[in-house]
Image 1 (cartoon, each protein chain N blue to C red):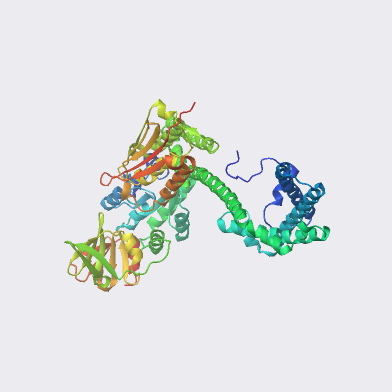
Image 2: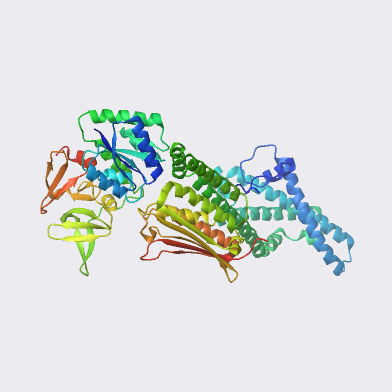
Length: 252
Length: 385
């Protein structure tokens, strides 16, 4: 049976979509309804539904950010009241999206498209990765020079860490953890901002909350659920790659 | 009152149309020369008549022995004024023909000091030229008059004597004009902002989506929401047309807006309005409150997972009205995407400054640890009669 999650911060809209789906696609089981982005991310990780209907504007995490953190097979369908750029981007990338207020015919078409996609063998969606990257890494303004050092305070002193020494950055609640082979530092700069300030030839964002230094990448591993993990030299644990970024490693 | 386009004509008589076409700088079509020379002549005549009246006072006090001298003086002055008016017209029209279109658009209407200075210089050039030509003409017409035959150079110098005075008059004139323009732009911008907020696509489509979703599930609620939405639109349209409103009307609009959002956001939004009858009777410029309430929602509560409360508190204290919009949303933690908030606040400050000068203020407070934002407007209390 196909399973799905609905995430919308406006309860009537979530309920309405649930009713519409029940009418048009009775076989679909809604396993969870989330009222914000953080709950949505947690519930997707917990239930691993086939589909996630994600409102783009949500408190906590936006729908795009939630999609960026999906590690499993869950396929995102975005919902928006109005997002000119996003809609254009999805149109070109042939992704699924819905506009509010919902149109029954449009929802019907989306359902058919999703059913086709689910019937086909799973494939890594390069278009999704590219579109998400474009929509989210949009500091639109002037390009700043790439960071060469990161300053981090620790125990009363400030450390100047050369970026080539950094293994990876990882978001941790309000902070970002900067990991080197020998140590760990906390900085306040969010991942999205770092992603825009680092050289894209050397640093890859592989997850909503992770940016790795390619120079220290040791290898990759796929598990039985075809999720991708990275091994980093000088670090004992593996790092998960979110589905949207898996295509980055296709050639490796 | 045409607020959005302050230059829009209020009457359409053909004379008024000709008068309005006379002033702006633009590339001309042929066929206007005659009327424009006529207008310039009329203006010269007016200036001359004003001078005659002033002169009359002088004639009464100072005994002029020679009435024919007076007669010649007046006629000579009229001639001089006419020539000056024509030369100013000619210089300005010549500039129109020679200057590139882009520059003309910068100069007319005058929007800044540079344009004002350039236009003033253009007019001064016309004045000097007219004075030179006029003096030469007078010397020709009245060759025997010592008064008129004085050298043209000396006349130019005499005009230059008046330069500081002319400069002062011009500066005062342009200052008043530019200030009035800025004020009108300010008011128009406030209204445009409200219109934009009302038809902001996310607000509009989400509200409609909510109404649609309630149609089957909860028809009375759908009806209530539709009514609240049309009330919101109507209140906004009404506020667009007034110069002054009561706090009561502003509070009603804010409460209605919050009710709409309450249906959408469900339990995540609570709100309270606290104001007594005195405060509600206060007069104030429209749309001061609404942007603050929108900011509290957009930057404080909407992005906060747990939601929270908006409180609007108004009170009269010592002849002053104090209105506060308080929320316990993200506050200083809000993402830095709050650019819209900045312009809204600047807009409110500018309108308060214009209306009340230093007697009104807008303060913003981000409690450091509690989160949330508080905005406080204070202004002189004046009750609706």
